[in-house]
Length: 433
Image (cartoon, rainbow, N blue to C red):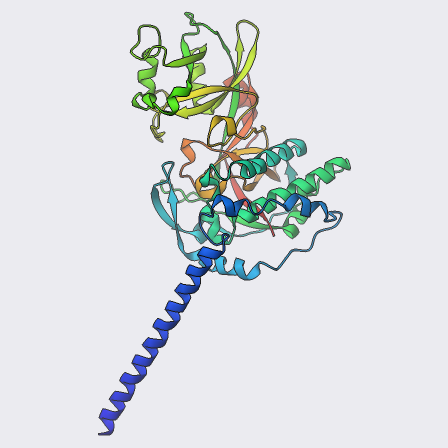
């Protein structure tokens, strides 16, 4: 009799415990669901309206004295801790078409770090300019470009879009005050950065090279090229621009780069007159323009102009395939400066060499401040810049940044310049604390 009673008691206890677990789990799920609907910072993809609620940082910062290190706010710590708890959870990494490619533990890529004491390199005025331009892109195009509202893999570290905007605004305020007072900027002091920013160490993840333990630093540039406004025997490869009707009639997605180069748009071709030739370059000049995204053309008539990629034929870039065999083709537009990221040609961010990185804006994020650490001449160096550009090779790409090195007249000049730059670096993401 006592044995039956004991068994019943154990069954009752197990049932009651199960009830408690289920009840607590349901309560937790309800809380998470409520937060995702009411708290835009927790959501993976906040709406543009939620994003635009955070536009008052410059006015707030102007009221803060930057003569000493500001005290970090702790008002958002509970929320930060909630998101940080998810750092070990898997996050989906997406490609250019926003299709999931693989999932990865957030802590595999990002973790807490600290900058070493070393010389920090960047041009104050150029970095300030690109930061302001990138911040303005968030302000002007959040409603049109939902990709910039993604927190990406950094979201597992509690980094929100609001944090990114706050970081850009704080850096703008510091740079403007230091430049106006004609003094070295505090953003070149690792101690100031360690005290005022979260320093997040970036451990690269390369599915093809799992042993890679440093971020690969490639380099790109804008090249000057001679060209003609009309086709000649030397300048026989056109740089084309789409006309306005291509917005509705996407005929151009049917054609590969090889189709275009066969002459389909030239007189007598089956699509003659459907696009506008902007310039005629050599074949080498075209390949470099397609690879770099921007070209500075010196026309034979003495004029000069920048041209930037506008829209492509929606054929993905294929890693490992030689440039001339790639089927992707870009159509260009004339622009007034070197252009980086933007959802359309008229919205692209104006960027500067020496302070701009191209990277994975979907999974790392637009406007993230990157700091690179490397040895040069036996000394440790730090270089700061902003992710304000992208490309097909970076979607997805958790192991590489591309450094905009400058404007060069030749590949030889470019290669000579980049010899001083490392191939692999320790990398960090800076977020205002």
